[in-house]
Image: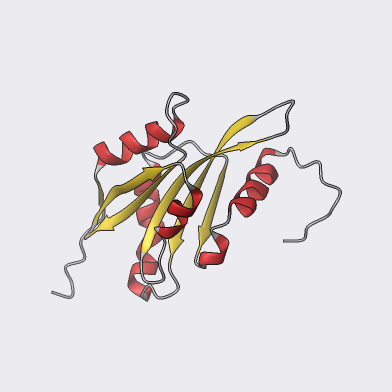
Amino acid sequence: MFGMQMSTSVDTASVRAAYEDVRSDSTDTQWAVFKFDGARITCVDTGSDFDKFKEHFSENERAFGYMRIQTGDEMSKRQKFIFITWIGPSVNILQRAKMSTDKAVMKNIVSNFAAELQLDQISEIDLKYFIEELNKAGGANYGTGVREN
């Protein structure tokens, strides 16, 4: 039925467990990926290898990512967190439109992060880019270059 738009729900247990795993200092988990199983968002994978993280994002789907990244220099290493909203370039208009609502639902659980990115190109899923964004968000950008947004 056309008028029966299902509202999004979250598999709270799997999402919260993955979120806490990424945040924990006592596990090796660096990232979690969350995807839609129908109208339900669930954790599909966690891990520590960035290449494996990147493999989860495809042209025709929507997803969320949460990642722990070490920033700073030898004197002040810090763990920072980044929240990623992925909308593949082939995702239809209706699904795109729902994403802001779906993101709000996710943020009820995945609430602690220094930077947030909305991406739609695989090339943007890049660790150096994520680190740049975290450094900008953290105000600890000691570079001399000026970057226009």
